[in-house]
Image 1: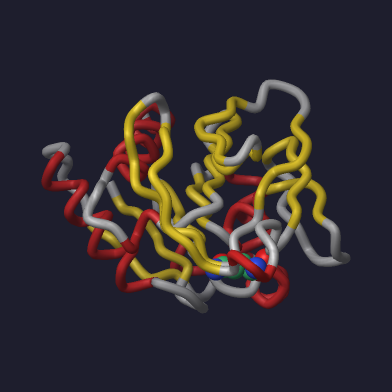
Image 2: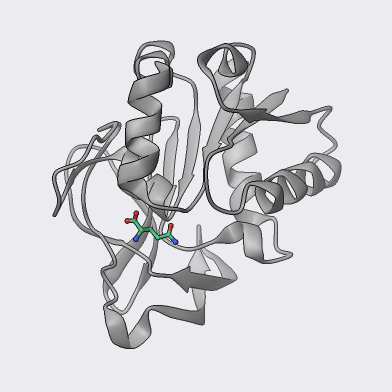
Length: 191
Ligand code: GLN
């Protein structure tokens, strides 16, 4: 299995490290690969879009043609923080979105007073410690979107088909739970 990590902004190396740790824990023969230009993504079985500035990342996806590739190939995606914004179909700003999850997202939704914070949450019915950095939240869902986590009555993790969007930063913890759920999704998709 090859997991591509979009190499533009954010915790790219941390995502690589935790994905490789998850391969070991799950006994998967896998490698990670940095994805920058269109050619890079073509042999990937899944893609991770990490945090950063979602509008900048969106423009990069369009410019490189990775946007079209994602839309037509159906490649499974884990989007964290800015990645969640990009996977959604609507946000409070005008910017390129992939629209692969029927969700509307509020950028920087937790406001100034809690720009960054950590808290214990439940993810996919398991205990988890979430790290939030200028995190968005989901304020509306439709269709068959599955809610994987909520905090403060706000939806902070969703999944629809082979796409998973997370408001927090799973790459900044030692816990591989989020990456495990994603790799299982990729395994199902390529089976
Ligand atoms: N607020 C950023 C955005 O919407 C995301 C922040 C992050 O990825 N840490 O683009």
